[in-house]
Amino acid sequence: MDEASAQGPINREEEKDDPLIIVKDLHKSYRRGAQKLTVLTGVNLSIPEAQYVVFIGPSGSGKTTLLNLIAGIDKPDKGKIIIAGVDISTLDESRLSKWRARHVGFIFQFYNLIPVLTAYENVELPLLLTHLSKKERKKHVLAALKVTGILDRAFHFPAQLSGGQQQRVAIARAIVTDPTIIVADEPTGDLDKDSAAQILDLLNYLNRELGKTIVMVTHDPRAAKRARKVYVLDKGILRDQYENDLSWT
Amino acid sequence: MKIPYQYSVRNLWNRKLTTVLTVSGMALVVFVFSAVLMLADGLKKTLVSTGSPDNALVLRRSSTSEVMSTIDRYQAGVIATQPEIALGEDGLPILAKELLVLITLNKRGTSKVANVTLRGVDANSWKLRPNVRLIIGRKFRKGANEIVVGKRIAERFEGCALGESIKFGQRRWLVVGIMDAGNTEFSSEVWGDVDQFMQAFRRPVYSGILFRLKSRELFTRVKKRLENDPRLTVIVKTETQYYKEQSELMERFIKIVGMVLTSIFSLGAVIGAMITMYSNVANRVVEIGTLRALGFGKTSVLTAFLLEALLLGLIGGLIGLTASSFLQTITVSTTNWKSFSEVAFRFTLTPRIALSGLAFAAIMGLAGGALPSIRAARLPIVEALHTWE
Ligand SMILES: Nc1ncnc2c1ncn2[C@@H]1O[C@H](COP(=O)(O)OP(=O)(O)OP(=O)(O)O)[C@@H](O)[C@H]1O
Ligand SMILES: [Mg+2]
Picture 1 (tube, chains in turn red, cyan):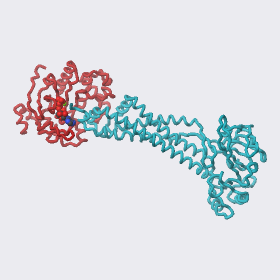
Picture 2 (cartoon, protein in one colour):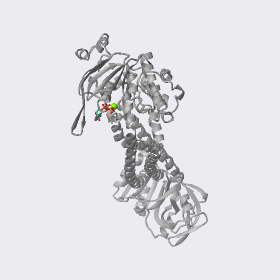
Picture 3 (tube, rainbow over the protein chains, first blue to last red):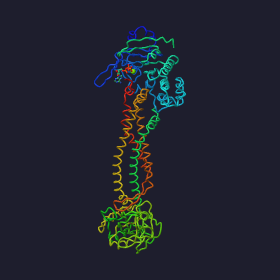
Picture 4 (cartoon, helix red, strand yellow):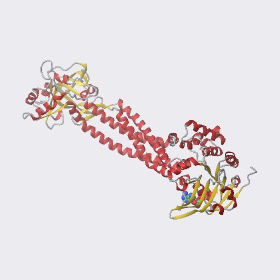
């Protein structure tokens, strides 16, 4: 736990129980033609269960890259990503797919709903990768749509919904399998102020009332304020971290 | 569990125009494909059912059809004495010495002419071909200038209806009866007294000798004896075999031309499907990335897109087959290349052809969809999601 102690006193309490997410010395670069673009250069962090963290930082600092690596949709060049005791950087493609299906809920900036499927069917999608029966799936889908407050639009297609409503459907899809972590990349980036506020309320609710672990990337200072903990990325390293006072919410 | 099939179906439905265009291409190919097979099948059926396995046909050696064959009266006499020939109630062998002559007749309502087969027959000819039925009028009388014409000839040629007359061999012949032999070549023939035909055409020889076997097993024996007889230069075939050989050349030609045509068309249809599927993939890159992020594997994505391509093919196939099934209502005629006479036959859509058509359509769909689907499955997730810039 050298890295953890190197990151200062804030992490002390987290060490008590094993953190849910441990990132160790993470390196990532992309190849662009002949050029090599170094994005992450040795990131270390650990996130306990039921935490709500946000990555902020200038554009191009590697926030999305870090999030994608934690979510298991990209592979690091070097380093470890241990989530609930599993080093996902060692998993092969098909194991990683199965791991994502079980452990990660995704929320995207542009919702990424499947246009030809109804809200209900979109939320049901991740459940098709489980062993649940149709009846059990229905129970879960309806529950998720209810939590996100979009049950009345269950049989609408994405194009028939507003941005905020679509994001609610997407959040329902992200929580329906009760994943270990929820990752959200700019979840309010495409929304107007009011819809954004509602979505942030919903995320706070998920974290506080349902104990979901949320890892979010954002540009939006209002969104950053709603997380319990903020990591600041700059040029591929973690430059700063602080905790928000959430008593006002 | 896989990506639900509704995903593939609804995506096709959503992009109606491209779907319709692609499906039309497939449909056209399957239409041509099945039409060719139906044509070949219909022709074969007509020719093959013309013969009976109980009858043996004797032709001059090296002649491939009755029209080219000659057998003189002496040889005919030798053939008639074979013990394998069945005897009729009168105690005489059931054997017919026949003469085949091609004449040209005018088609009704046009200025076109076509070859028609004249068959000089004797009383046994009717017995040997029980599938030839007189439907109107009567049989010709021996020694008279009378003829009985096949139903299809009566319908399609001038002067061939009952009571009308046609001229050939410098005589005028009265149509006294119409015969129907179903889907066989006899429905496209004109029958008359063989002796009258020989006189009219000044032909001293027969074309072939047809006889009924006492039993089918005797065929090889009589064949061997006749073909080895030093007084004869003949070849012996069962009637069925003879007509089958007749159909083979044409069947093969139709199939070759048809398949060349189909291949060229299908190449177009496959490329069309490929373009459509590539654009379907390109339009849904983010969707693919999302599905993969949610945990659907490469195979699931591959399957969903292949299913889409398969559906394009199968829908096209069904439409093509439906269109070609209407061909069944048409009777077409063509020249039989072996005998150079007109044969009329129908397109028949058999279950086998329908299945081949569908299988062909499915293969075209899959062939067009293969590369695009592989591309879809191989997309790296982060690139598909395009999370940067
Ligand atoms: N798959 C990729 N291929 C090539 N380059 C990439 C890829 N993903 C990210 N990059 C590059 O890596 C750098 C960091 O990207 P990243 O998306 O992590 O930044 P970010 O902090 O999320 O920025 P933003 O705030 O603009 O979203 C950028 O320069 C980006 O162009
Ligand atoms: Mg980003």
